[in-house]
Length: 94
Image: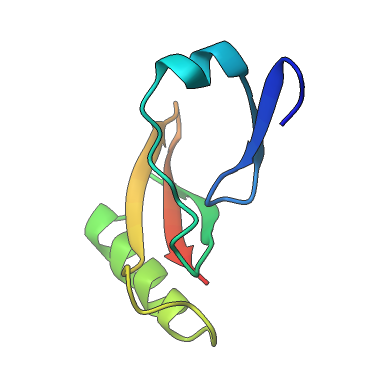
């Protein structure tokens, strides 16, 4: 916490700076009770690939990695629809 800004670390391990006045005016939910960090991996696939199949493959791949937390479970979101490909983001927790 500085004079004007407060720095916070997200579940993605990124640092955010917020003006102190904004924090005084807002209700803040604490994330410090969690023992895990959210990890994010971005994959881009051609539109010809079935989105359900991409989801299955990404979730199967993360299940092979040692260390991801079982709760909350990993999940996949479509995060961008490009001109030639769809972007998927796999979220998992360690």
